[in-house]
Amino acid sequence: MGSFNDIIVIGGGIVGLAVARRLLQIRPECRLLLLEKEGGLATHQTGHNSGVIHAGLYYRPGSRKAVLCTRGREALYAYLAEREIPHRPCGKLVVATDETQVERLRSLRQRGMDNGLDGLEWLDGEATKRYEPSAEAVAALFVPQTGVVDFRRVALAFADDVRDGGGIIRVAHRVRAVERCGDGFRLETSGGTVTGRAVINCGGLQSDRIARLCGVDPGLRIIPFRGEYYRLRPTGERLVHNLIYPVPDPAMPFLGVHFTRGVDGTVEAGPNAVLAWRREGYSRWACSPRDLWDTLRYPGFWRLARREWRSGLREFRRAWSRSLFLGDLQRLVPGLRDEDLGAWGCGVRAQAVDGAGRLLDDFAIVSGDGMLHVLNAPSPAATASLAIGEELAQMAVEQFGL
Ligand SMILES: Cc1cc2nc3c(=O)[nH]c(=O)nc-3n(C[C@H](O)[C@H](O)[C@H](O)COP(=O)(O)OP(=O)(O)OC[C@H]3O[C@@H](n4cnc5c(N)ncnc54)[C@H](O)[C@@H]3O)c2cc1C
Image (cartoon, rainbow, N blue to C red; front, side, top):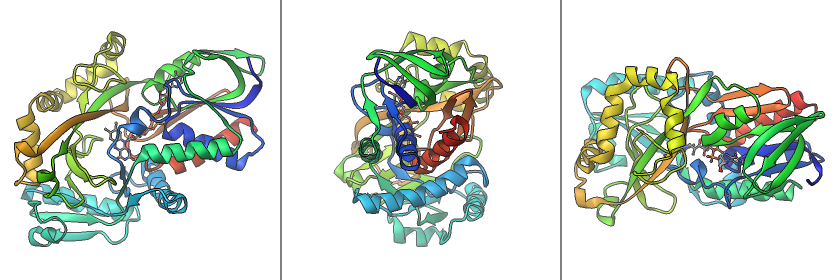
């Protein structure tokens, strides 16, 4: 069974690794075990995202997302420099493509300023061309704090920190059952039984299920939303210098399909946000009867569907129609052609939905007796990971008396 641990972290994505490394920094004597069900680390959301270091433009001032994104971004840039991890603080352009979007763009600028972003630059259509000659805009906002990085690489650097700090990481250890024993927990995993005093659940797309395994009713359900991309061929890459985003729909937590030049120089177009039939499936056909059933029998899903069926249907049609996808991209960059769209890929977002059918906007952390559960950590949680790790580690120290 192995030795008794002070802390067991479930989940080897960027959030679990960030909290583990931070705990070992502030409590170096702590016996920490991190369990990951896959054969390697960072294989789900952390390894399937846009790689954007978000500035903190979109989030409600004072919310966890706003505060932790800003703090996490600053800490991340410092970490990347210190560890010499390739990244590019290139800034991004948010583009209003018709007059009806200009007011929303102004509100976004105000929100960015409320969130402490300096140096936001308002551009008219002509000035936009200085940054992105192929973009079509009536107005645009340049956000200098945005950048790009490979978050998988960041997560693997966090894993090195965990090991250097004396923590133990076990891959191929799927947590299947959790029960209380004495003043701690016994976890049955696919790699054997482990015990510990406290548990931190950072299970991403499975976090609601893990909470239930721990006897906690999370009061929400993870609904998976696939985010699909096309990689641009070199003919299309020439049309995009850095990052070009639309003005987002304020009712939705998703940002709209956009262009991202990654740290490796390639350009991705997407992601959309379409209901997925499998939580950890990376093809259009991926379907898990269990995952689908979990979505369909959740009343919150039907309340969401009743309210948002039009946008849901539109996303669904666009997911299956390359020309609709292309049409939305052409609103930002009219010169893009069908033959510029190359390979298809996707990620799946863990988006929590409550019983009333609301998409949870903010990060959600629920604490129980000897437990912490991270139940909603979608974008910008990768950007914010160092700050989330700091907050969770502090909560663990206070609540578990470490
Ligand atoms: C399409 C897309 C684009 C995105 N773009 C951005 C972006 O540009 N910038 C940004 O900041 N964020 C972005 N995000 C969000 C970001 O990727 C996530 O917020 C972040 O990776 C969440 O990390 P995590 O550790 O919580 O989850 P994950 O990386 O999913 O890790 C959870 C881990 O838990 C493990 N696990 C689950 N169940 C068990 C179990 N029973 N036992 C053991 N282990 C288990 C899983 O295998 C997994 O490795 C994007 C996400 C997607 C999907």
